[in-house]
Amino acid sequence: MPQVRNQDVQNYGQGLMNLKDFRKSLKPPTRIIGGGSVLVALLALNLLAWLAVYDLSRPAFLEVNFFDVGQGDAIFIETPEKYQTLIDGGPNSAILEKLDGELPFWDNSLDLIILTHPEKDHLAGLLAVLKRYKVKNILWTGVTRDTAEFKEWQRLIQQEKEKEGAQIKIARLGQEIKLGKTVLRILHPFEDLEGREFKDSNNTSVIVKLVFGENSFLFTGDAYKSAEKELVNEGLEISSDVLKIGHHGSKTSTAPEFIEKVLPEIAVIQCGKDNSYGHPHPETLETLEKYGINILRTDLNGNIKIIFNGKNYEISNF
Image (tube, rainbow, N blue to C red; front, side, top):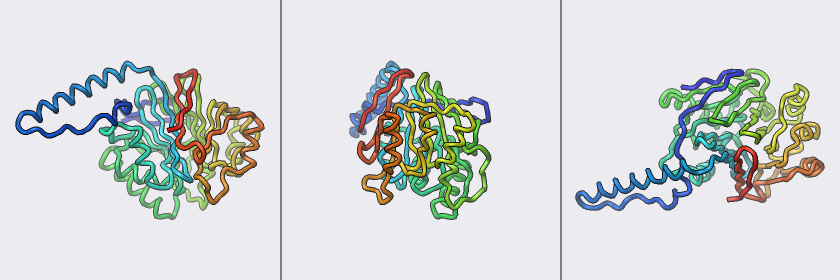
């Protein structure tokens, strides 16, 4: 199994064939009496082989999906080599329906899941994912919480490790994960937080920079302005084409000096429609507008898909 090491680039898992463009057209074969069922099975295998050849001939794109899961975060990434990563799972099992829309019906595994921090609006959906999918690698901070969701998280990842051989790693600055030609760089937390308990774990969030060719994303979890300023003060390379705004657009995140350093073309805010927190906060929107950044919101735009070829990108809603 692959290992995640500081300043080392490692491969995760095995590439998976994704034929989602044809998923809805494929149906279970009708059972035929006698040898007919064998014929149907052979025809189905032939069709799948043809589709595999078609899929391999398609252009290589990176897809990043910001799912509309209500008041929470859930981001699904698929590389050109079909490595699949899920960053957070949202507040409930709605993530399963979202993944059903992206994965072929036979695909029951994920290469990597990242829990940015153990708050319910990021954690709860991952519990449902762990119960349905085989997860090869799990990256999280090791921060503990005294909640029912967290206790279930601990049970499930330990079960995944023992039964499925999942690799569990603690995130910290300096780690790099290679997914084909795509690289995930861990920028935060700055130290090992395993076993430490925080009443509010938002500011312990894993912050990840994704690099694919000339394109880049910055995913910030629910990190506060203080963490954002630390990234700036440490002189880390955080400029990115797309920024996932911290803490659902709350005024606790999106420091002006941080935005000036990242200077993205696109800012994505994941928040629930008519949420009780008033996210995104007007102050956050004003900061983004000041820098002329294109703002996308799951509460207004629904699911957001951004497709990159390493130089250019295309945005779609689905």
